[in-house]
Amino acid sequence: MVKKVCILEMEKVWKVYLMGKVQVPAIRGVDFCTDKGEYIAIVGPSGSGKSTLLNLIGCLDTPTAGRILLGGADISKMSEDGLARVRRKMIGFVFQTFNLMPGLTAQENVALPMRFDGVPKGLALKKAAALLELVGLGGRLKHKPAELSGGERQRVAIARALVNDPQIILADEPTGNLDTKSGLKIIEVLENLNSKGITLIVITHDAKLSERARRSLHLVDGKFMDDGEFQVNNNKNKKSEAKK
Image (cartoon, rainbow, N blue to C red; front, top):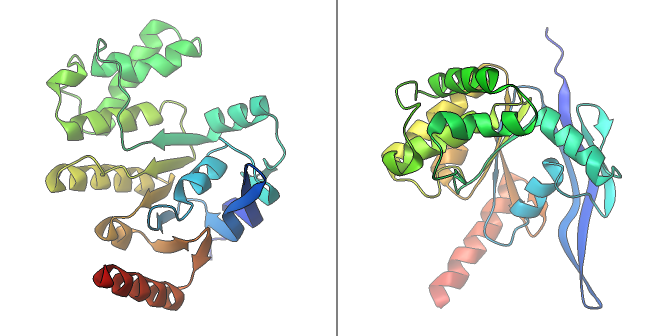
């Protein structure tokens, strides 16, 4: 039996913001473990704490209390420089918005982060071409964003997220700006990467997307609920909306 390796672990994690003199908890005592190579969907309504959780997992913020272990390293109290090093080494981000440079080709957009890291132009463009081929855009290397569909632009963004050979991909509403067909293609691209051993964590409110994950976690009011609790809470919300 193959022993599973926990690549991400959160222990009693809290994130509390100070609004004037009022403390507002966004994440409340979360315990969470992700095995290497897992495919997880984190589902929740607006205001549930999904974005805050993504920032904590992605080394963009630190918790108020509790511990976060990423690849065995405790990132809870790291400096901004330390977080940046871990982030660049381990994590690839895919966002709802593509954030591509309009004046650059698909290949140049993917190569750009490598150029910033000092990778020679030829090597950066070569790797960018290989990554675009991996996401099914080998024939679109010289196309600029305006010449690509929304789904193709998102695939360019995914290729760009892979330049640092990440162990974890964090995808925040990756199909949110896409039609059904394009969204399905993006899901298939992400699932293909997961099949190659990359841990995939998708943050979404899309039930169809969450159903494809191996594990779905429901975040409500800053904490995870089991399926029974989530169903009760979901029914309450539906009844409340029906009365409006």
